Image 1 (tube, rainbow, N blue to C red):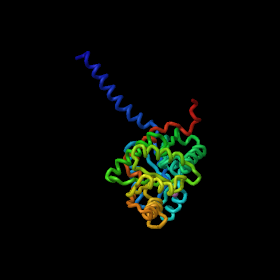
Image 2: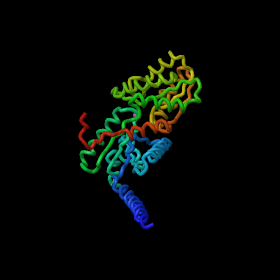
Image 3: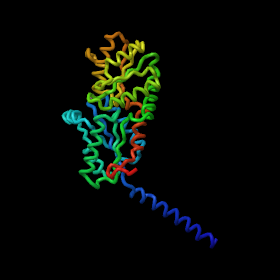
Image 4: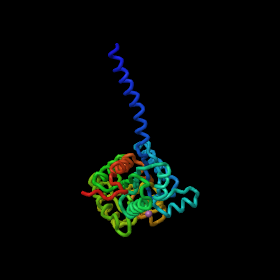
Length: 297
Ligand code: CO
């Protein structure tokens, strides 16, 4: 008994130490935060997608503080007039800093690395330069579609979502940009999507692959029934007006006039689990700390 006692005492001592040391470590760990950066929307129905995305990130990054930034100044101004303001990138970073966050993951919710993403990256870098030492590290997660893996996972999510469609062609309206920025990313995504499912047809509202090319593709594919969906995070203005709207220049009206049977699906990509998990993966993969010099190879 006498020999055993010191051992038991040591055992209790080590348990007691472990119990006191662990919470102390947790307190010392730098507080982490996520800044979700979306284009933004003024369509109230589309807002629920943002809520879903926030829930997903909160579940995947427990303990992280989550903040939003809308990259569109036009959208931010409209929302401010409506009395429900959402900040931009520097507002979001300041809000995280005010909550004691030291490690930030900015996650782009853009679909491809076009103009909006380039401006987000620039805004983050400028903010980091203006506030040296505010954060220990700032990471920037890439947009939805860049790698072949991204496109394969996104196509799988879309196929899963549209099983019920039967023999319909699935027509996706990407945003695109008139300067041609991201045109080739779009071409690449389109190629991978069509490899996965030849029912996928894709064109852009503003890019080089336009409606006329879509019409040609549908005709040569001997398509009759078409389901329209926006290749966008939320079903906002473009989906409701330019794609599925009643005006005679919408894609729905023009396809109807060309003899196609049309159904429109007003769902944003962000509603799909498989899409949200790509954004989460990108947030976890972002390992390039923007507060430091680039890593030398
Ligand atoms: Co637009």
